[in-house]
Length: 80
Image (cartoon, rainbow, N blue to C red; front, top):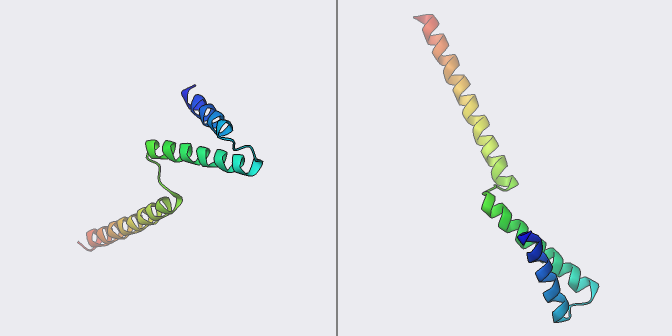
């Protein structure tokens, strides 16, 4: 309820300030929604797509190293 009230308050302020043209109004609405989205993302501590891709690559590399080490370990045990 408070989130919708925030958006409604912003819209009423826009009308009071005289931003009646559609282009100005739509750009202001998008700016308000983007700022709320960014605020929510920040609170949830989400990562961006680039950060997620980097983390996926790192995990894949670590999995490859683990498999390689396990393979080396098993070959050494067989030799013994």
